[in-house]
Every structure is written in C-alpha cells, then in structure tokens.
Length: 86
Image (cartoon, rainbow, N blue to C red; front, side, top):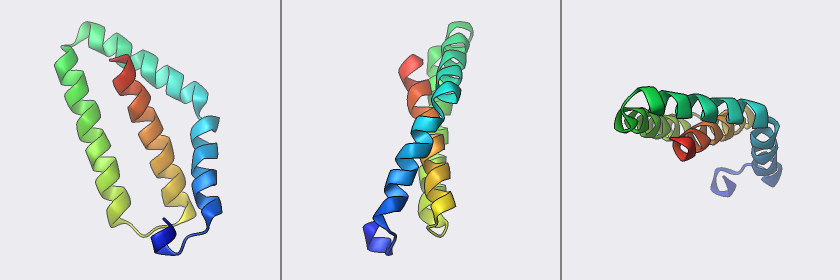
C-alpha cells in the first residue's frame, strides 16, 4: 500500500476492522466447521480457497481506497478463519 501513495493509517485501519469483526469471524468459522462435517471437506476447502483467490484478485483490480482496504481485510479474515476450522 505504501507504493500506492496511501497513508500508513490505512493499514492500521484494516487491522482494526479485522479485529472488530471477531464475532462474525467466529460464527463464520463455526459454520465452515459444520459444513465440513456435512459435506466433503475437500469441497468446502475448494470453495474457501476459490473465494480467497477472488477476493485477492478483486483487491488488486479495484482502485485503492480506505473502503477497499477495510473490505479486503474483513473478507480475508473471514476466509482465513473458515479455512482453519475446516
């Protein structure tokens, strides 16, 4: 983000929004655990990793802004915890 002439505070704001979403992260992780118990674990992980790739691709394609950094941080946080619980 420093190469895109964004203030350092955007990075810390991204961390703050990821921390603020703790309850949603836990519920999404719990949901992925339930789904991996009902569906083949491979299918759940394929969806999670495909969603992660899509989020990273979109983040690289859209213009950098505070909102894009916050949304990227939140979605990567959701998908990271979901993969850990699957």
